[in-house]
Image 1 (tube, rainbow, N blue to C red):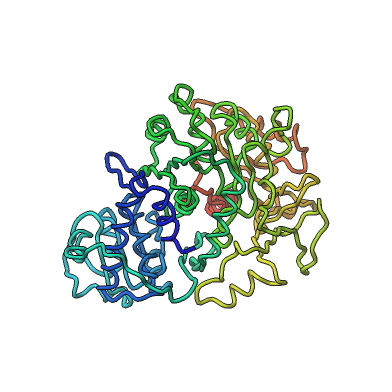
Image 2: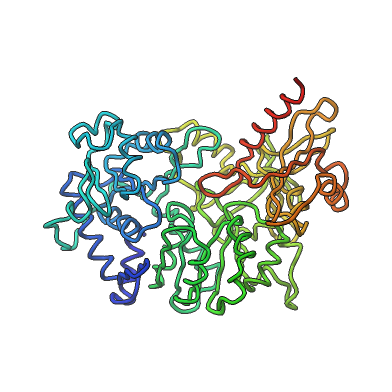
Length: 528
């Protein structure tokens, strides 16, 4: 199924049913269908052919997301552009992915002008100076000096159905995070997203027509999670900014059944004064993922939010559903919390083979720790115009995730670290995630990050940076003693630093690279 097929499937279940909502704006499935036909015709009229790359740059916005279905209707390839990136990174993405059209929100017009190498107001005829491949520029909500508004661009374009034959199976190119270098373009096929959708519908509760609340960026996990919802004729409620007060109000107002948040926002939600008084009985599935979650905070969420928490583990290259933990998997048959599972990423999905592998390509026995590798139709087609990276990721016939883990006797996958984050101290392997889980058991710690730094005695020493909950105070030696009492002195940090907040990527992941740089700089200063 192409992206447009999920919309059309939902329309078959009720053309007049609510499809997309944002604030006071509500579009039915029929509304979105007609809009998608107009966008597809607008693209065709502008010379966009099947297989051409069309980028969308916007924060969460109803029309921006609806444009995705017009892109698919035209058999073009959707390239989501992260609005939180700097202009230089997004310029690289547009150029490297061969984007010929850009649909953007006016809030990012200055960024677009910068990417084009122009000052705002210098005219559309000069815009090719910065991005030679771009032929079409459209501003979603209002005209700007170098692009018409969406309404202007679609003027006199009707919604007569447009039938286009796809050029190939590629439907989406998503950029990797870029935290270890320039972003790579992950080529996702219709089959990749169909497998992801099938796994979602197989693995998690869906009772009746779902209502999905999208607060996290639609350019990432929150966007593709809309597909299974639309396949069931469900409603997607879009929040334009990450406001947890609006999030809670929307759950009550729209009787939300499904939603997704990364762990950092869940931690904040658990402290929100309105959580306890917000009706949550409509919730069936509250997904969490994109980064490791504290087992202690997850158990707190099972009480404060409800027995609806649901983990997903994937990556851009194998979207969302490498392994899955449904709400019921968080509990034993007698209803008690299955604490030993809370540090896991769930079980491998039924359409996914997952194993651990040593550096020589040998598959390891259950319980042994190695790199997590995957085989599935979930796995990407490859990296765009990067055969060496594609070959490296697929060596020995398996997709390599870059994560270190093990599979326990129940079949649950435990991710113990990123391969590059493992610490070797005094000849012992220490996995940063294990130390972070111990830290997060302390009631005064909001979040943490553990890294290894060079040490003359130990080779590497375990270093922790922690963020405390509001109004709490802790001394570093208290934190070290707390960790020692749980996982022993070898794994306990030799140095603890308390920071008011941790540096994070555009999608909320803690940037250990930035923490390491800052601590190395500080250590060098101490030696002078």
